[in-house]
Length: 370
Figure 1 (spheres, rainbow, N blue to C red):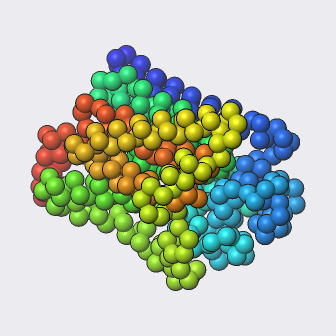
Figure 2 (cartoon, helix red, strand yellow):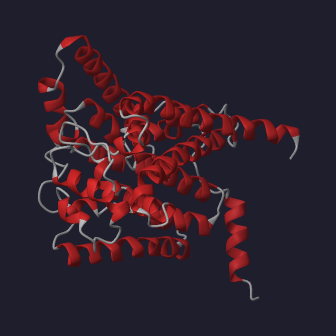
């Protein structure tokens, strides 16, 4: 590799290492309090049915005193990946939790189906996802003549770091989100398709990434490419149909994280938990974050490519978040993490698009007889 290309590659890897290191540091207080047991990271509530299921699998499983957190359900999916065992019966709402099962599935896969190994597998996947996401973001910046600072929007993203610390799917979803755009910009169509097929299974709202790319291809009158990318929705739709039949409800039915526009943010700002100095700081950070993301949304109205379309779609979803998705400061940061990751790409001078000459050459190659 030429020296001129080796240095940006090493710097991009450095951003990835920074992201993983920050997450590991964030895990230390929780792990130390639990005798360094990784079973404490999914945050299984001690007085819940999930605690009984966890201890049936591992009698030494560490639980927490409060009601627990969402990571416990990814652990549950890692133990019961197709909702055919007993663990999913103890979920608060299995139909919703199995709407985005990919992180748990990978936990099952990399634990080789050994339930006691799932917590370790989830931690490894989360850290690897942060590494890949930050490296990819920085590499995209270097590839466009910038300084790779895009990687900091992953490495120092509080919503992503908090998610990694608590065994949540946002780091994996971010790696797939950026992977899809990186592959698309390089005209790697097979890799783009794979990322688009997987990303909605990590977090349902990221189906908008697929819709944005398909919509942009239609806008550019590349109908064949649009049709191929559209088929990436098939695996997700098939899984959602299976889950609906097996679990008796769609993932979006019943209580939801969405409500009327701005209801959740109004509640978070006016009636959130802002007592004391820590609460005041959280409120200040939240206001600043909302202002920044709103200004970037105005910039995205230029509609220069699928990144802008994705940002606007995710912003529209964020506007409609319910109070249960915004009042807790950590949850608000999680639910805006994807927007923060996309900020530098919306602001960038050059949009993330495949080079026209590369795209045309690939189309001609596909049409030529073998």
